[in-house]
Length: 130
Image (cartoon, rainbow, N blue to C red):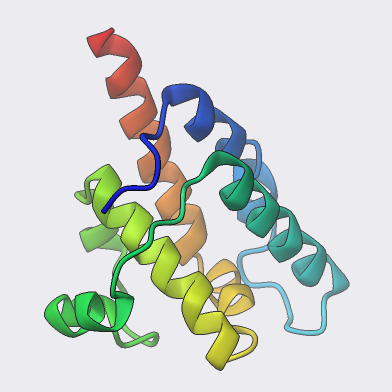
């Protein structure tokens, strides 16, 4: 159910947030930079078509490991493929509508930085295959 095929150029646009995401790991919820950053992240995900249309509730139920926000999922992210990263980010964005502050939380706890790190590896792999 992809809306768009993601290119290395799309990934590059999202990766422009990499350094900033690292700076915000461990930030305080009241840090104004967090809100600014998540708005920038949303725009980037939207502009590139990174988010997908699918039943994210069902996907999270089938991929239990990603459901608990308190769980450390860095190892799972490190081996995730592009589709999984897209579904995970879509789930976070959709979930933020019902649980305000969810996006800021994944920035603060380093999950987003880990996702961007994995995206970097995928981009490098895609470029090497071209």
